[in-house]
Image 1: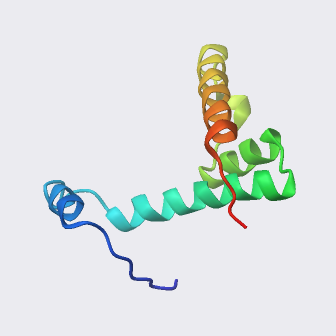
Image 2: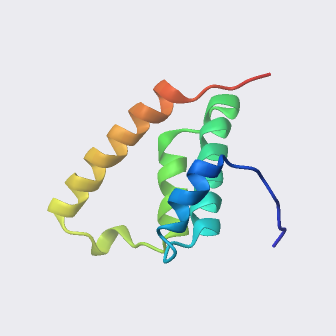
Amino acid sequence: MVNITFSIPEELYNKMKRYSEVKWSEVVRKALVEYIRRLDVVEHGVVSSDVLAGMLKEYDLDVSSISLEKAVECYEKVRELEWKRLSMTQVHS
């Protein structure tokens, strides 16, 4: 692992301190992974199925063990996230 340092507003830091049980480095790592995924999709044309496959692998999930109801719920959530991803991702050159 590589350590990095970044700056945040003091107000945000004070709010973070209220939730000492949260592993903030993990929150930041996941946010960075997701943002890089968004950039890859825009820049390299990665498709939704590739993103989904990566998520399943990351969380060590087996699709065959999921009920139909859970699959529908997950599909709807992925569809919503996909819409947000495509509508909010901006790549700066």
